[in-house]
Image (tube, rainbow, N blue to C red; front, side, top):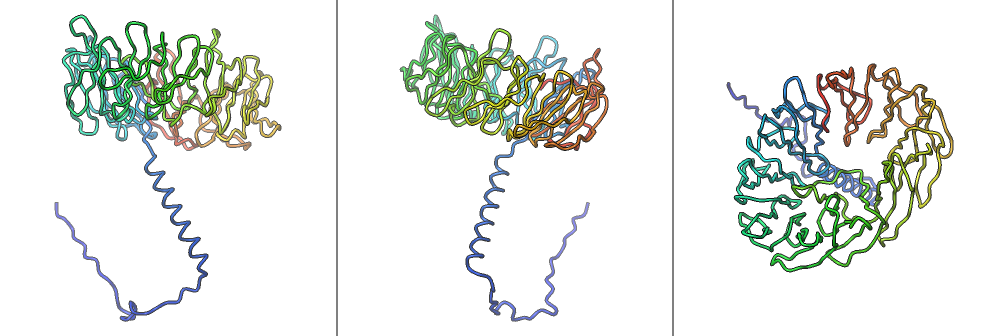
Amino acid sequence: MTEEKHELKTETEGVDSNWRFKVFRLRMPIKAIIVIVLLIAVISAAGFKVSRSRTHELALFYFPGENRCEAVCDGKLSESVMEGGGVSAVRWGKEKGSCAVLMSNGGKYTLYFSGNGGSSVKVSENAGSRFAVSYNGRAVVYSGGNGVLYRYDTKKKSGEEISQEADSFAVSPDGETVIYSKARESARSLYIYSQGKSRYIADNFTPVGVSDDGEYIYAVSGSDMSLCLLNLDGTMKSKLCTGVNTSGICFSEDMTVAVFNDGEYTYISQEGKSKVRIIPDEAKLFSENDGVLTDSSGTGAVYPEESLTEQFYYSENKDGTKVIFYIDDSFNRTDITEGAKTAQKVKEGLVYLTPGGEVKLFKNGESVTAESSAVSAAGDSSGKYIYYITGEGELRVWKNGETQTIASGTEKIYITEKNVLLYVLGSGEMYAVKKQGQGEKIDDNVYGCIIQGKYAYYMKNYNSSKGVFELYGSEGDSDFTFIAKDVTCII
């Protein structure tokens, strides 16, 4: 192969050779110049912010006929294969931009990591069942089939041994620090690992979470199931809760704020200070983003919110409906509903459907009824347009107290991040509509849709006996393209 070199030539013919010495008078007011400069600065800054905050969004699909799993990244199949007879478990990073996937192979497990545009790398051919991925996706911590605890750096694509054994472990949001416990003589001891070294902390604790700098070490005491905040030397910084529920502890992104419950009440603590009772019962954060599990047992989860106030929370009734509350930055509680079948966050509010069929919009501290006899509902991100299906299958849109019918015989509705409504008729026809416009037909024989961040997918020609379908995707609009066939969903 020969390398072609191109010489850049400057044409000067017909150009005044003294051009660089001439002075041009700019006939534009100074104020206008200042405005233009400021606009350019704002646009450049906004563009820089968007480029930095953009993350790749992954979705996982399994090909049962070929015993393989593949990631779909930004609506495209990665073609990076994760082999195995089935998917045993998945742990996601922030905003599902990365994940660790445990594939079963007979009596063994193979651990993969998927990120960087959906490409997958094999972390271990002989992994144990316990593993965790850091919030930023930079590390996978796992126990090997030999019982050894490892940390895998997903950027350097290299692993390091942490300990010869570990009962449980937790990883910091940046993936650099790990706390773990292991049996030592008659006690279970807690350690912290950072920069290639382990340090003993204390006995009789199970790890839950740790901040990047190791200043916030959350662990559960084995004696009375207390959620504790420890110092590096093992002394108690704060005893946050006795008899803590070990299945739903929420942390802010920097690990300084924790929300937890004791089965009777839910509390919040900031920087290890005294807990504040915010909600009765066992309540969880109502977030549009999934939390990233901090530890191998699934006890804690980190959420992208800087603070865990000015948020919606919910507890569950026995019939599966949700009791929903709002907590402001002064820890004041607003009760929204005693029972919601479905609920969706919109701008500064919430759209929810009651068991009686009422579609309600909660905004500015009060709820407004949009419909009284619906079976499903969805709102656009602004909360201005609320779509719902009546008991007779009519699809309607509500805006500012006025209702308009869009279609009949509707079975399912979905709303994308671009505020495109996708709806599927009982006949299998799928349409797309925005605001109050006319529906645009997308396809036939559609089984349903999946909304994953900015991306939308629909399943066509579903085979109920094999559980597989054809997959199509779009970037949240109505321009769908074919992705794969004979797949099943494991998002």
